[in-house]
Image 1 (cartoon, rainbow, N blue to C red):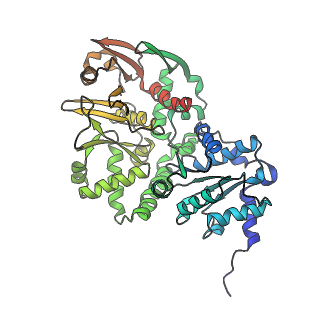
Image 2 (cartoon, helix red, strand yellow; image 1 turned 30 degrees about the horizontal axis):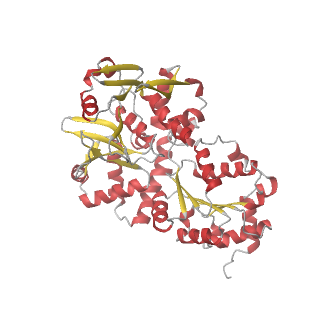
Image 3 (cartoon, helix red, strand yellow; image 1 turned 30 degrees about the vertical axis):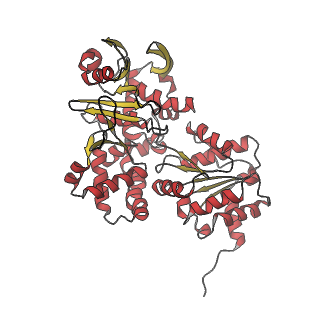
Length: 473
């Protein structure tokens, strides 16, 4: 008996099943009852303004890309868009395999009876399952300039590489990072712990967020660091209890064992896995290709490639140093590697207690993670013989530091601010009149010589940095 082939009516039935708003003008209750991530507001601006450009929604696995697409559909319906001109297609659905994006769009028009091609919103999920998707998408953008195309996928490294190669001038990338701490607080309905205020910084007022119960906020900050980077884990006590298995099986293993090997032809997956484990365990520490090669037994050139692959997959972020006078090194031998999500370390090893020695590195990692959505090519750390400053921002216009931050998870330096010798030296060297230092739970100001030091708890600083992403748009 010959194999059966999919019939056109079966394809149309599947499309109608995936798009319930064609009949009832609303998305599925499963998605409607989920609280949207605040990133939806930034994403929404692109949905409404990206004319003759496709939006490529990318980021790590399980951070809510599909959910955000459905929330965007819900907002379109609320604003009066024609429900029959909004189509969502999951490209990995077996019945769609082998079809081009153009064919799928044609089937959607046939299923709704809206045969014209203007005014549509077309959303393709899991786009990486279509071979040469970037060629198909570019052609759609060119052929249907009056239609908005939005794609997303979990193979972040593949999406970014293909988008950069083929989508110049036609694709707009939107990176959805793991949860920021401010999102975590909002999704957990903990805003009662936060107070909006102002602090004096450099003689002027700046919006800042503090807590009316810093001990309680710190407890949630520790939970966020160990478990809170993924929306599903953050909102589910059951998943939080078994987060290690969830993160390993559904995120790490799929990226390390499937996404990266298939994209880059990696044969020794065990090598890659071991290197990632080493980097995760040492997140926030300074490393070099030489010591990573020695520790792992992998050639330096291979280590360098693996780090590039892991960064493309949004698992890590590499940060390069500047000198004490904020100059670039002619040859970078050492650099810092941060996990993009602190929950990865807890899943690979074990959750850390707040008093453990390594927890300070995870605090620094978490604070760095709040910057992931912003253009962060100005973010560095300073390193010289005998000195280091954790975060330094170089102005692209002047190539001079705008600010410097020292990340601490202790009150020791609030009590003894003169002990911050590296930070004070860096400020004097670069004529910075002020700097910020995080603490465990203390706030206040000290002036040492001509340098004004503002001290704030690390948890409120992390909240403030993440919150400003949405305030600044």
